[in-house]
Length: 77
Image 1: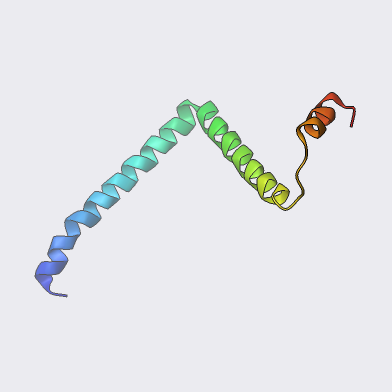
Image 2: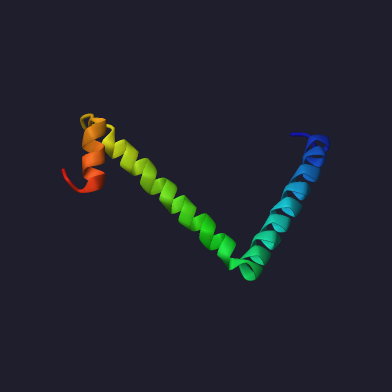
């Protein structure tokens, strides 16, 4: 790679580093000032992972009728 080509790539690297530093600072600030937001994001993420796993596991099982579902909900199944 020529020296001119290397010189042209450097501004992108600098911008990427500035963006990375700004995102880090913003994330740290949110963690310090609003830990509830981080907790909510983590809770929602874990719920989504659990739901995805449950859907995958249930995908191989047989179908259940509407009445069967309501019987389970009523506790009469």
